[in-house]
Image (cartoon, rainbow over all chains, first blue to last red; front, top):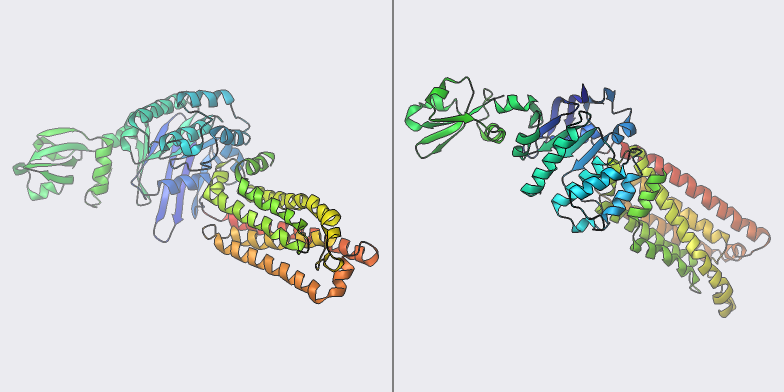
Length: 288
Length: 220
């Protein structure tokens, strides 16, 4: 059962376009939405929430079209953007006082829980918060109205490693009841290694991978070869092929015959795979 | 809608805006065209939209569980509330002018063109209505260029204010008539007053509808 279905979304800008973006978010899951800056992550999230109008396509929340149920759906979605820069002169308690009035399901106990967990003082003004604390505050707001789906755009950017770790723990706790889900865009792929069940990878406005995170992890092997062991044709089969002294390193497909020639071979991390796909040769044979 | 108005009052108002509203108290200055005092609250409205833009108010409001058209409605309700507040603030100062300032002035300087009366407030509502219509119709069309609607709405409203004042200078008979609190003078005042209110309401409603339509298609 999916809480969110994005079907064939198109959006054209003069210099960029989303092309036929489709994916879904199952209940109780964390879906990582990855891609480099400018790949279309934020535009897609904005299309889902209705902040940007898609040229074509539809977004279904709980099998209902968002277009005709804007207010009800927004009540069930918590939206968090990484660069939370609203009302910097206002105190957190003022913002909470305002925001809470819009949500019939607002839960003060839950709000207090998250504020305590994130060690936020609601007497502080927004301008006194670090970027990470701003994200935490907007997350506390989003989590306090029992949203079924959290749409998080780069929530961990600007967070120190400990805060990031705390936040990822919080994400796992949120989805553990099977009733909440998270769609989490980031370019910090290591965050997703820990918590994402599904992965959606967008590149230049197109979805190039949509599936289980483990499938993505298993799609390439990291290998190191002695330079003399590979001929020039074979190096062409190594994704993001680089030379370090006499060693050639890069990624190869798990079924590649080159694996037998590798001196070091291991599962590629998600970050290595994404980096290789982004920085490697734009050869169509390199896909997932 | 209650939550939205609460949000507007709690987050969007700032002391600068209130200072401009209180400048409508300048109606108390003797021998000075009272209508001019109501240009300052318009400057306060410009501050309101500028500070809202600086605080990313539109993006903030659009993330709340409300329809996009209500984002505009909330702002227009706040604008009307501020305009009414400026009128209410000016009333005690207008009374001070009538009861204390004017008796101290030479007889020929008591009522410069348009004195304190219902017609004055009718013209205030007219100017506010024109400002609302122009500003709202232009502002939500292209949020990335807020200075153009500010310029057009402010300059046009100020020009109309000047034209009204010049008309009273060029037509002293009308000036004398409109400052009378009896007979046809009073009827004229009340007609301008009611007309001003009607123009304010219709202009603001039209401005709201155009702004809602424009804002609906804006990508944030």
